[in-house]
Length: 301
Image (cartoon, rainbow, N blue to C red; front, side):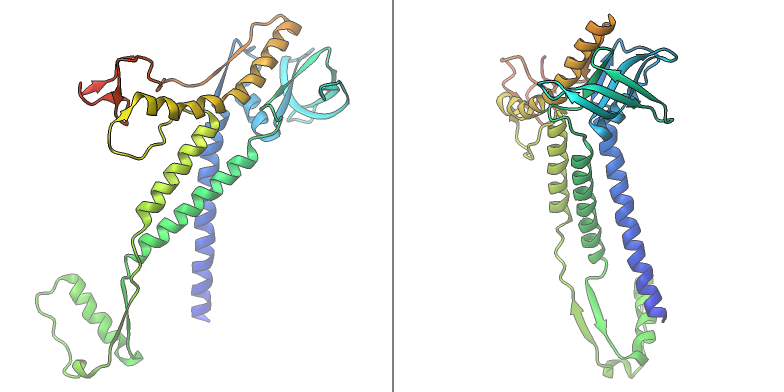
């Protein structure tokens, strides 16, 4: 019974650890996703975080002007009567508190998350599960290094050997054993678990960079220690720049439609505080940090 309880304890502990790791990655990837775009001149009554959160979860929101709260964005509920481009002519906005508003294409604008008009939930779930799985492998592999061997011994001698290994681990200069110890049959079984945690971690880093590239975040996905040429850096950044186009295009088109309908001056930019792309043709080589290794400093911009 005790062994069964102990096994179940390890089982549920493993489930909890895996779920914990998965939730951490999911939250972090979600945070990255909903902070990719910066809305410029957004009316103060609109919560930008909520806008992007709804786009992440539902793939579309509706922008309109309410008689009570002013400008607002809400989840898009029921809709009907499409135009020739499959844009609903009649829409229903649903607020978090349950309030509803019946709208049309004459008094509201739909903001889409991407050109496919889908949410970002699936891809975030996919990568969160992958990162949690790699962490599980790494933890198991590292844990295997703690017990490189097993000793098979009789039940009667188990306590004796435990005491001897406690003395050995404690660093005693001399360990005295029973005279019958030499006749005790021992069988040592080596686990021979190879240390592959570093390789798995490198693979996880590659998938992390892949996720960033899919989101349009600049990253240099090259695992080499030599100097990187300007062409290598720019080619790596090309995928990131192309990936951000879908979400940015939909938001800019919505901003233009909102400006035309309500006389505002909205704009959307990709929220990136740094620029890794090397523009100066004289900077032929840069290292992994974007620095000129021959000058010992940052590459000229």
